[in-house]
Structures are given as structure tokens and as C-alpha cells.
Image (cartoon, rainbow, N blue to C red; front, side, top):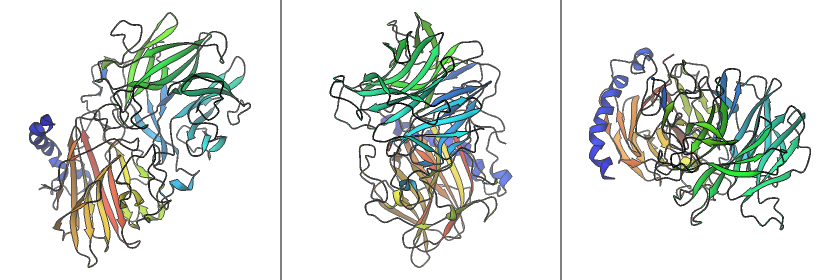
Length: 595
């Protein structure tokens, strides 16, 4: 921790200089408040370097459990986001390196009441790893909700509209991670699923998860048989099926468990995750040979790398997108995406570079781009809320209460109306279970609807700032800026029963630090981080900022990386609102162009 403390003040001084322009009180109009948004895309310590190379992670944010489908010259990616709404983000790229967000598969999580704003007890469930496919002019997205089962939704356009999800198998039979394949030669469709131990018989003595292949109807919407077991392995999941030059390949992520002292989702450096491949020249059902094709290397300080999708470039070279797993000391940005070259040796893929010459690949840190000639791009971050719809970078904590937010009531501003916080009793807010390990889960924050946020980018430095109008706040209302993933830290305004407004900071255990009285209508809030250490600052005029609250640690949790956003709730009644004029985020990595 000494390195953080010794460099913290110097680096924050630099960050404050580069963000000053956004907060200058002379820049009150929308156009000028965005003056610090770069006129063109920039580079940083990760992603496209602008010289024909890239540095991993190429998508250094919480975009976990990717699956990729190529149509024409464009690559499309989906990633999971649990209880966030809208669900299953969609990104696109022309070169596998530069990705922009173009939508979501699920406008809301419509299949379970626990995801609604009046329940909010679907934490860590909802949208898990999915499979994206394009077949005969139709897009398909398959995913398994641990609490509901296997579902499919379809669309004619990747950007929607997507159909209402159709359930295909119950939760009693399946656990997670579907992967589909259409065999055009045999005119058969298949789906492979991690059924874990849900169908395991006493005759299967192999420890670990069972993975079954089911035959589907050609239209991809019905299961036709009871499935056939093809592989059992410790933590085996995230299977993808490929048929290359007549040979069947199943890519699987598999845990190597060395210590059972922690629960799933909790970091444990003793546990490793590798990428394995099953190979059969006979049938999709095997028999299969098994080989490890990717393992930990030196590029990411022992952070495990696995689970993703195989791609091919126009020059016929092969590439693999994979995530970094959360088993290191500070994976607070979540599970980012990395790109690795794939070479084939003796009919087996080697993912990355075989740095120790044992026939198994390790992840790369820097490499040449697979496709040249495309500009640097990145998911959106900044927003002046001048459009009719929210940008694709934003997601709600559970399905929002749509009557209580607006982009039109005060044009050019985001309005968040305060709802009464949900009751502290069973059936409301997060549960304590193997996926949600949080001893502060009884706090109001987790039961306050319409919290809106986006991902942090990278793990080096970042500064986000927003301008608020607090004139519409009412007694017993709390509203402002939040950073949260598994833990939260808030800076905002609280209104007492007499209408008096005070600044406050709240830590992850709901302990509040009361700040100065706020008499004006404008409030600017800024948050900056160096690695996983962060601070809050506030300003009443947009020019002079003062720190408030302690330096705090941002963290991964609830299977979610740290996020930046806004909150608003009322302890007594549905009353009051807060307006957000603009949001801007600068970080050490590629940034989207100003539109």
C-alpha cells in the first residue's frame, strides 16, 4: 500500500489539472462543458496503440463471459451483466480490437419478478454467459438464468427488436453456459450445456460438472431429446462447439481446484482456470481427446485466463477472445476481455504464445493487430443527456421504475425521481448466498430503485465528474454520485425534515459523514482513482473543488466490477428529484470520439 500513498497526491494533482476544464464556471453551456472531451480518439496503457499493435486487455472493463459471431466484415460480441437492466450488452468491431456498444439483447429482465424495481432481490442472477448466433437471416441469443432455466430470444436485426424470451429447459436440469451449433451438412442443430450435477447418475464417478449436448429443432427454439453426456470435469463450463475441416472441437473452461476454503465468486489464488479443448474426428458426441491449450502466464501476474470465443480474420488467421478471471488481489474493474493469436500444431490450437515450450499457450500482453486500417474506437462514456434515449453505456440496478426517470421533463438533463426505499425484510433487496457475499446487504442503497451506472475503464487512473441541479430535492431525500460493484461509496446531498440540505458521504456499511450545508441549486461531484484507491470531491461553482470523505478502496463483488453513476431515494415517501446535466469520464485507455 505504500506505493499508493507515496504517489497518490502527485498523481491526483495531475488528474485535477486535466479535468479542470470540465468544471470551469465560465463554461455553463452544454457545448463548452464538454470542452475536455477529446476531439479524436486517444490511446492509453491498453487497447489499440495506434501503431499497428494492441495491448491487452483490449476491452479493459467489466464485459465478462463473451461470445462472438461474425457476419460479413463485422464481429459482434455479447457479454453477461447479471441483474443489470437492460441486459446482455451487444458490442461490434471491424478489427477485433476496437469495440463500440450498439445495444442490449434484453430491454429488461422480464422473466422474473425478482428483477423488478419493487423487489430488487435478483442480485448476481439474471443474465449469465450466453451464446450469440446468426443463422438463415435470424439472430439468436441463448442464455441460462440460474433461477429460471434455458431461454432463447431472436431478432432480424442485431440492434433489435428482440423477441420475448422463450424457455427451452427448466432450471432443474441445467446450470449455465449454453453453446449452439448448426451442422449444415447433416441439417441438424445442437446445443451444449453445463448441467453440473443436476442430472448426474451414481454411475458417473468423475468429479465435476457434466456437459451435455442436446439436439434442437432447425429453427433453434425447441429441444428434441434428453441430451447426451460428452464430458465431465472439475468446474467445466462455457463450452463452444466448432467444426473445422471436418473435425469437431469443443472449447471448455475448466477450474483446477487447489483449495476449497472459499465460495464461488470469491478470489482464491490457489485455484486456477485453464482453457481446454475436446477433439473428435468421428462425431459431435465423440469420443473426444482432451488437451489443455491455455494456462496462466507471465503477462497478467498469475491471473487466470479462459472462456471466450474463436474468430477468424480475412487472412484466415485464427484468434481467440478470452476474459481475465477474478482470482488476483485487485480485480476491481471486473472481468475484462483479451485478444490472443491462435496457432495450430498437430491439429490442436495453441492460444496465445507458448512461452515455456510445453505445448500450452499463455496469454499475450502486446501483439500486432489482426486487421489493420480501422480507427481507434471505444464504448461510449461521456453523456450530456441531450438525446431521446439513454446511451448504451448506461444500465440500471434491476429493472427501473420507468415513471420515475425522464430525459424530457427537463430537456438536456437526466431526471431521477426519488422512490421510497424498499422494506428491510425477506423478499426485498439482496440475499446472502454463495453468489452474494456482502455483509452490508441490509443497507438502503441495495433497496433503492433507479440507480443508473456505467463501467469503469482500466485499473490505473480515472476521473469522472458530473453536474447536478438539486433544486427539486424534498425532505428525507438522498441523491448524488455513487461508485459501486460489490461495495458502494456515495457522495451526495441529504435533505432533512425541515428542507435543509447537507452534503454527506456514505461508506459500504451505511455509515454517514455529514458535510457542509448546501444552499445553492448547483452541485458538481468528481471522483478519481489511482489503481483501487479512490476519493470524492465536490464544488458549488464548477471551478473550485474540495475533497470530502475518506480515501476508500473500490472492489469487485457480486460478480461485478466497480461502476460510476447516480442514485436517488427517499426514506419516507415518493418525493423529490435530482437532475443531471452532464457526465464525463477520463481514463487511461482508448476513448470514444466526440460525436
